[in-house]
Length: 278
Image (cartoon, rainbow, N blue to C red; front, side, top):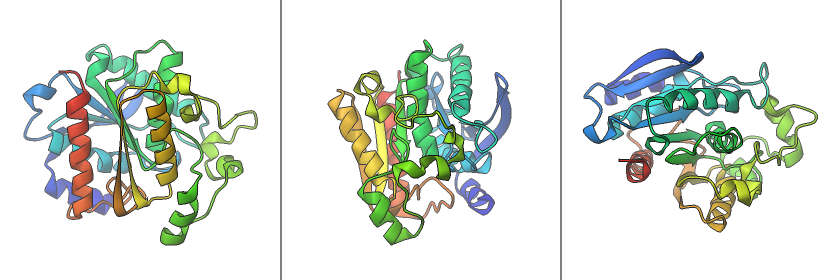
């Protein structure tokens, strides 16, 4: 990931400051040109992808640098605990810890949360976790390259594998392929793991942006989650790019010269600008 991060930093001028927020490691990414006046009281939390196994540091930076620069906003990329050393709900707990700390400075309506792949799933899990632990919902969220459920299943799990390579998984394979969830007694349809299965949980979700591509193995999860959010009465947008592979605009290799990548970033920036508190 390092070469891609280096390239991004030649295109987008940002400062990256490692911090520990209430004990949780994170990178704070800010545009060198300064935060826009309208965003002084706003902040975004990024949850990196990587299958709950990799992505710490460089992965989160890759997902945060363009958004911080193009949106002229502060982005905090959280290095949450991952498997196989840590198990569910360690990551949700870390996100809640950071979120609770930020609530001391920002109103919840001014905080956005987003991530791609595992980070998108964790975004949904975190909102569900907030609900059950007395925390207010954030202003808006972004679930990219995945859905609000574990594991990735549906048509795209099969045709995405054919188009892009990889291994076809079934619901029974979730714990095997994602050690973070490898807990014998864990039900992968638990609302704290897969909120998409619970309309009562989804009903309390904030405005949600879902992004995928026609070659993304996570497309079916994104489509299903979108339909469930709409059914629950949530303001939800779904954007799908033709020919785009899994999280191509986020990681592990991002090319800022690809038009669809630029379009995805533009949609993300405009979505949070529209839905976060003023």
